Image (cartoon, rainbow, N blue to C red; front, top):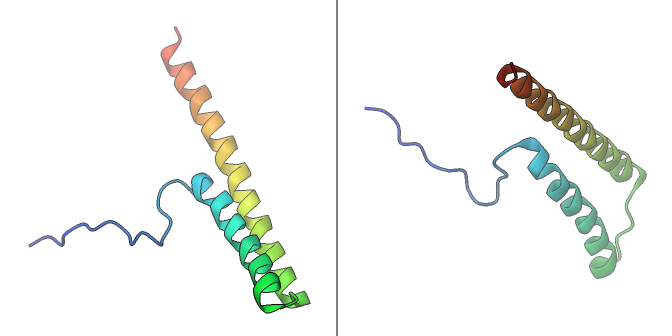
Length: 82
């Protein structure tokens, strides 16, 4: 008997990476601002360096996805042109 396919919980991102990265970066920055405004927390050097790594990785993935999509479009056009 095959296992049923269930969608991921609504809190988990689904879809293409390029669609989820801006939301993830926004949530990260929003959490830091929220922590400062509500609780008066100052981000530590470790938190800022970790956040920088996460943001840099996300931007790299976004850049790679844009390049891959452009290449796929060029390949599709090349296949359909005579």
